[in-house]
Image: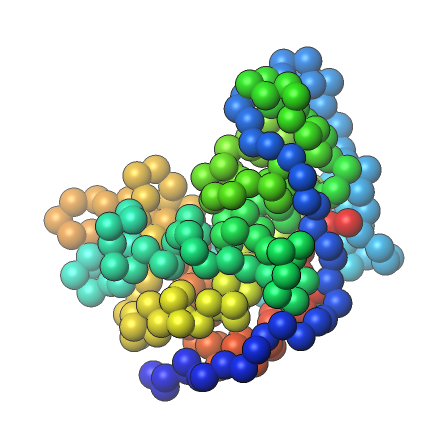
Length: 271
């Protein structure tokens, strides 16, 4: 594999993109009343254009990945621990590959500024689930900003950005095409987020990614067999490992990504 880590020039040039929200606080469980009121409800946000309407959103961006790719990513696989480049916890040398790894901010739109900063790839990934007018108050923090994406945007760590949107997940407010079998926005959004993570962090995330060589990358988890794999004993790891497969996809395109050639230039943030 070629070394794709260039001496990058300043990447503060501007490109078009949606501005993220900028306020809110993290919280806990959803309010019973708000969750009950929201059941079956669909967010009002719509992406501009004349695309197919899925679950309350009008989607226009053509996917680079197709149904066959989605099936390949979601298929369960078995890996050997001794031959895989795996990561599981902060103590692992490849922890930078995790979406929860800190000190690797992403800037979107692509201009280095505080307004455009996302603290971790996990934060931007969860923000892609909601439009700017989706509201759901956590029961543990009734005084929080009701806008789910604002709360995600305002978090300062990956775990908080995940926890603060649980009320909206329970209330069924995640965009309708997130797990749609024909579009699988959760997979496409993750690919986009990982590409941005490489673009802005070539000498941390990029260095660790390059050092995996051509080995299969595996995200080891205690419970998640979709994004990662479970340890099955006797050195075997099994699961869909979608995150690991997407990391390998990014590894194959490192040079193009670092030049700003992204799979989805417009991104997956809803208006």
